[in-house]
Image (cartoon, rainbow, N blue to C red; front, top):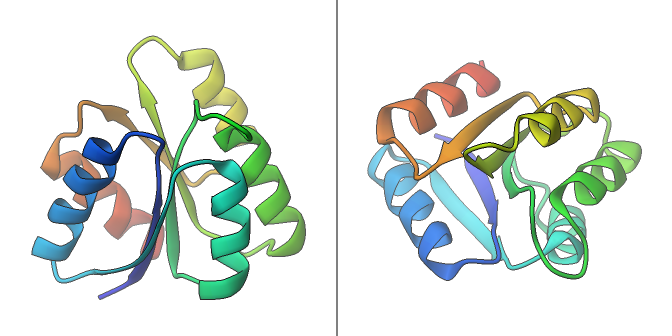
Length: 119
């Protein structure tokens, strides 16, 4: 069971991920709407894992992962992206993301990514 922070500007996407993760006995310790939230909440909550949307207002997921990993090099981050954002997925991995999941979320794929990153 992991403590997970979910950051996505779409409430529906946060809810979907939260349901998948809690059903698998993980604890959702916080939710954010943008990259700035991600950085602040990471510092505050020190989660085991963060799911980060790439495209968000105020601060993108890419900027957030760079900032989080600068301060917490051991941070485990899974990026979330819509179809067709391959270039951003590559940038995310280069910035330190451990995996990525594509929207709309497939429950099996989400859990596979989470388990792989945590182990």
